[in-house]
Image (cartoon, one colour):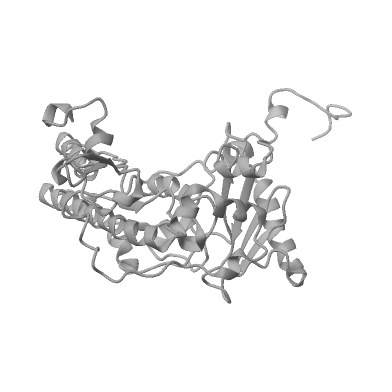
Length: 374
């Protein structure tokens, strides 16, 4: 950024993620009280614009050759600060209230309780903080949407849009005050239910176009999907995911999976200090089905939500003995997942089958009585 007029050793922090005060003093975007102010950087030089420009340059260089582009945008993300005009687009609109209940704070799970006590959660539990940050966050989403539109228009002008499989997704969500939390460290929907939008250009996908699937899908399903889209067969002895081809082409009524898994290691997170956690045991596992969400925590009681009766997940049933049967069923699914054959990466199933009995052909005779045995 120095080359285009933004001086300093760290122009990303000092310009793209800082604002100016009334006397033109630099205000760091890390402090959420400044979220309503515009970033010091011009919009065309901001992170989202810069990343999109890089993608377009990449596409220009690969105009007549196959390509694969992983385009990783930084925003929306902290520091919560947006360039003009995106910093104010949602400032005067009525925004939804945080999804949370005082009931969540009664007899809370110890790890969840610790999460509510860390700095970012205490901040976002205040309405004035959420009201200041959320419009900026939405502005950053709108900026991303606008630049993706610019990118897709370039693909159309280049003539490659109808040959391109496009996947829009994220690595995690952001609580922004929902459930009295900030950041991403628990397993409510704001954190783990991430967007996944797939645009498959093939005619076979016309039947599912503009539809929405309620199947349980994991991020690890994307690589198998890409391999199959390119006409390959994905190595299921290496990759654990499932191809989403049947969903995109609507060729099967069978669900991709019965349950989905998420796991988290909090050994270096602030909560580990509050809990004096043993690093070897600071792990959490989530199992979710269409009906239930179960969270297994090492050393503590489980967490359970009934997604049908409590879709907002405000009532933790983890210590309710009346749900012990559900606990056991979901814990068994976690056990089943933990015992999956995930470590064998040297040979595929078909290769293993082909090797059966091969030792006899090599002259190895284990257990034979004499030469007359078959």
